[in-house]
Length: 222
Image (cartoon, rainbow, N blue to C red; front, side, top):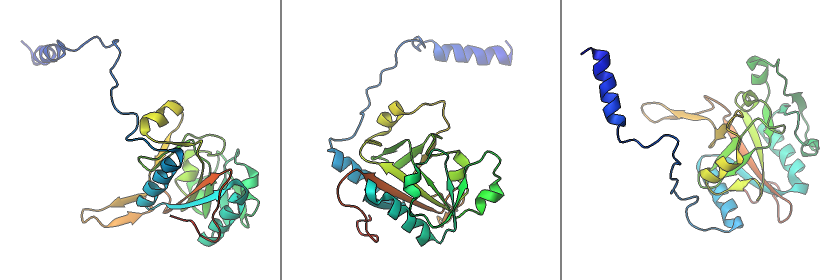
């Protein structure tokens, strides 16, 4: 018996008890952990985002432009990458050059831009994760990886879900999905944390709602 035949024989024996690959897969895992109200789910998202060292802001839709303008100015950015489908009303208070998301932009050009402002596809409360899918208000993946400062707007409560399974139901796996949990960071063998290695050094998430109190001069941040 050859080595090939011996290996294939072991594979066949290992697969002998495996059920039909076309049979439905049992999915008995929890869809979410515990029961929370909508407000509690949004609070959990804010808490977990902050745990990952994202800076979280809350505001109403009417205050969003002022908040974005303040965050860009606070970072000292003189230019901002803008996805083609971003609501221009969000940028009404922006005092910086707007750089279009273009296919021909080079990494070197994007590295010279101070900030990027995007929307998102969905936000997951239990993991503190923002998911981008390359939609019109998010643009190409690279614009959220090269600039040092990312401002991501999350509409609450409609874009917030409790768990990863719930998020997956909303996402198209054929799209370019980027899962973000805090600013880019890595650690060496001595566990010294370094941020900004594989993406933005600073992630600011704005949770924007249609009503309720908003953020004024940093108040209400978590």
